[in-house]
Length: 420
Ligand code: GLU
Image 1 (cartoon, rainbow, N blue to C red):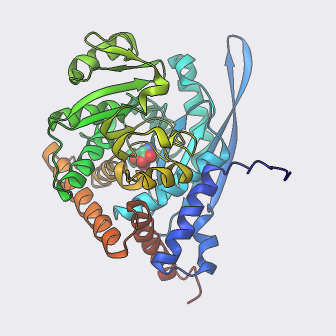
Image 2 (image 1 turned 30 degrees about the horizontal axis):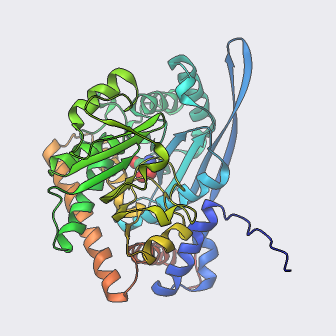
């Protein structure tokens, strides 16, 4: 009998690097450059002491600056109990490839604090944010590193962050994006990620002779990304037949009334108990028969263990890194297309770029311009990806990473970072 040793589970950062290795062969990036391109430039870890209910609690925060060859570091700040160094590293790396793929003048970064914002009040969140941003402020700046919201954070928190940075450096709206409109935030930023998900999905449908009209969509997550994706899918006359959040899932084969669901979530804090819907076991959400399955919550939810049960035509990665490489192999084997995160959810950072540009110009754009430029950038980028995938007979993921890697490699070379 041969002893079976369990394969050690790879970390999300190793998984991203595996995808980069594959892309380096397609893009022709030499191996000696890959160590520089894979690894973060700088990693900061800070302790954040807070007194909660008369007890001192220590929270740990990170800011990982992955690559700035193409422009200032850019990426969100996540507040979530599962935040850890390896995960933030992988998310920082993904930002480098995302900004390169949509050709906006930024590099990649990500930050986070391991905490549960759902059980913290505004005073505690304010104190946490001010201390965290004060402690990382020395590496931030509108030409250095520009944070934004991510899972568990929002415009309100970005406003506090801007003020914390401003106390040390003077009024600097371009230091964060995703701010409240009152502080120089941009119209169209709040729903930009969800809107981008639908722009990209529609483009895929068109390229394959299909339409979103009547398409059945299942969405995991009803936060800032999932809820607005649902709204824009319905705007294209698609049917959102099931959604789930951390508390549970619901379904209605005829299509959920999304404007009413927004009101229900606003009033109750969850999708569960929504009228004209049936409860659905959340374990079954990913296995619903549909055209588009949209994971819009956590990473690593479609894996080698459960991908075999997915009954969608296309998986649209609205979240960052929701499909593991093992999961993707199984989906591909079952002829299920995966539209990768670095293009599917790039609408958010693209409108962040517009916000930063408006702040620097001190000139606000009209909403129509935001939409027009977002649409143009996403359509052009995804057309490139689909063309590359066809030409090289490869997946949309490999095409996306290859295009992005080539751009960052060439920028690094132009800076003299690599052998001349
Ligand atoms: N957190 C978002 C993302 O993962 C947005 C980042 C940004 O706007 O900088 O793309």
